[in-house]
Image (tube, rainbow, N blue to C red):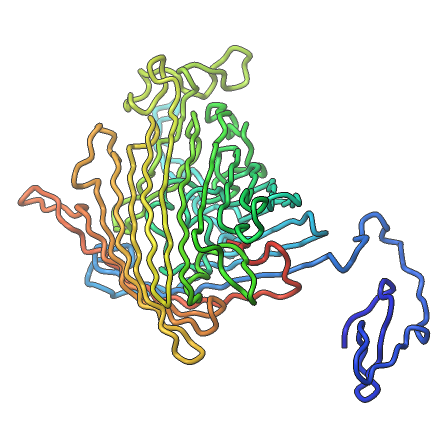
Length: 518
């Protein structure tokens, strides 16, 4: 039986079943005159409720990814005694959120990273010994900093639709339109982890973005063939990378960092020569990860760029090798631009911010007259192709600038999606590389080049709603050291992953639901 309200003009009752309908039909009798009008309860206010409830739509979404991991002796998933001796089970992702459409022209999205909230952070302690005035040794243990204390806000933004060329405006914290894998929800990934390129910069940031499909005004059938996006962001990353209650452009972490106000500019152009994906006979645009269930030829090409004059955020490349901390891809500027600037609380004081090169051993990591700021420029070129189960995807990403470490990444993925009754089985192989001047000696040696091979399969029980993934990662590096031969060699740090995923969507599907909640 349908749900009706006072806004319903006519109701019809099925004479056999007694069910109510809003449209006439066989064996249905109009019953509007039998209803008793009930006055609306406006105690909660009337300007805060939708004028047209039919256009109001709410979708609640969630996702759970449980993972089992085992690694070789040199990986962080082993105590070093032997390979695969410590099977580790954990929650990779636990997400909850909603997409709300208030009217056809506006809405909002909110998503929470529960995996960052389920366990409490812990303190790292430090013990120091000093002498008091009488020359006696005094030992003090103090808390130094909090570890694993990340924010839980994944996305929080408003979106506004303009009825021309499918223009959409986004404001808040959301995905920056750079690498293709950023644009894909983690629920749709063909491999259990994104490629090395996602290690360069945070996926989310605070800012504003415009998206437009310019070919729609030429001919409606070309609506989904070309999408252009451009945005301006704080350049500080998302709340996951921030501190305190705000993640703002002017955040200085209580004057322990310089005030860097250069925004991050990002743009992306995506061309789909055969149109978008087809659902229920309608072109719904390109939704990365859904193309593998399409039989027709589909191809998407992308090019994107990003730029900032002051590098304020970076991600880390984690080899998951015991004894090695993750490698930061970008330098983060820790001195004021031009080597001078105000810090602390005094009107003319440099405060806590260090501006003198004499106090910094790494001279190529600070700003001065010759290197006024540490900026970064990035470009990426990517493609996804599918036809009758064949899947090909690749991307090449390169960065330049004083903060970039001249990082370069490439990945290529090939797979085939077998349809087996109501299920799909998709074997996948991915090859990827990353190189960067991690030690800042102005050259890239063999120890700074990494290659990874992923071999595995996806079993789709209900599309991406429920799937099982089994993958083996082979990492080629030069991280292990032979003290006798005095040379580096490939560490034993290959890793085996098994992951189960369950995703749910409930509520009324709206304009944003297919691409939301990363």
